[in-house]
Length: 320
Length: 199
Ligand code: HEM
Ligand code: HEM
Ligand code: SF4
Ligand code: SF4
Image (cartoon, rainbow over all chains, first blue to last red; front, side):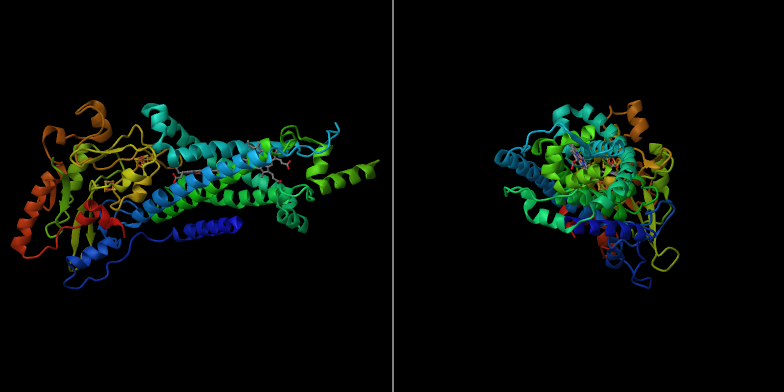
């Protein structure tokens, strides 16, 4: 479902890029006698474009009412629902931890490890994750900062924080896109959905069952996160690039749309990242070391990724 | 307290661009930025209409509502001003503004937006009145001298009116009576009636 939403967002950005070649403003509706007063006033409020000696993309447009709609959607819809979504996610994760606790290793560590994430994989993961976190912190400051940061840090520090944050966000964005693309290319094939993943998802990842459902290298949940990040990341990056280079995509309507896609997409991704980081740290014993050292204990592999474990074991046996 | 407003009477505006020039000169506005512009509809055709437009200093100003760094403030007289030291050049105020008032100098290799610049109603900025910093960042502060914006003061036909809302509407009402019709003024509802902006 989320993936569908994200795909739609990508489509929207594509459309936006296509229409951006269009001319700003419309033609006046009439030019005969009596075109005065109420008539032209109506045209002007509909965004009619005239001639101006000032040369600017939209200088001829006297009134552009699109801003009010954008303001309402961003300020009255996106901001409150985003705040709710973020808090609810944290609340759900906290209660999950209180109710279910940490998923422990069922068998003691064997001391034997398997290589799970190569150096390049780990490098990709932590650069994408690191940049994402910085982008999220600076981005959320842009979205919500004005409501509490000046009180927390004082007006002057806030100004400096926002200046620096915006600069960092602007330059890190394109770099994030590059690393994300590399990561998606490297991991995409392995993340194709199979019947095993469907079963895994149907059984809720074994959260409520005693039996742990089977999984290959990645389980259904991880694959969902992967594709959610791939599609959402692309939508957020495409809209972010549009916001980054207003000189090339200057019409207000396009930038308003880009801003909404960007804000909604990044809020959804941040919620997802909360869940993911929760799984990677406190929720699942033994997972983090895989992404840190590259090696996982055989007990962990057998418990969480049985099919992968068997595959690796079969290969090892074949080599002997 | 007075409520400052602009009113442009399109029955009088002759597109001389005197207001644009007066503003540019009085405020020493940066290259590439025009705080005021004149737009002519049906240029060169019958029923040509011209209107001079700049920041209208809106009630419940949309720019103020969306600025991520909250750098706008509205004076007791209703003039909408902003702090360039805090502005991050995100452009959101322009996205929200009905009149296309916020302007941006292009900066750097990628043409990013610099600090936002817009009409100040000739009221300077948050710096000390008539200080060198205020002059450099925001231009003139005629309001502190008890004067009105230069664009309106120099308007050759007095199409552009600026000042206390009551006096401005008194002058305009006299014109309506003389003409027998109210066709000239524009943008008033949009700028000064926040509810009228909603659709
Ligand atoms: C504190 C933050 C984070 C921690 C502790 C963490 C931890 C982990 C761990 C342990 C894995 C490997 C799971 C396994 O071996 O099956 C993993 C995989 C992954 N992580 Fe993170 N991560 C963090 C943040 C992020 C962020 C912010 C992103 C992206 C925005 C991200 C994207 C991914 C992806 C795409 C995978 C691979 C999923 C797959 O293909 O199976 N991670 N993470
Ligand atoms: C996936 C990580 C990202 C997150 C979580 C994120 C988050 C955000 C958020 C929350 C905002 C504020 C939106 C608003 O106030 O309405 C924002 C603004 C912005 N983002 Fe991102 N963003 C991410 C990636 C990117 C990328 C990849 C780019 C560029 C390629 C980018 C460029 C921008 C730009 C240009 C703005 C506008 C603000 C400004 O110009 O100061 N972002 N981002
Ligand atoms: S005209 Fe535009 S810049 Fe001026 S107060 Fe209204 S919204 Fe703000
Ligand atoms: S460009 Fe500056 S003044 Fe305009 S909304 Fe952004 S930070 Fe505020």
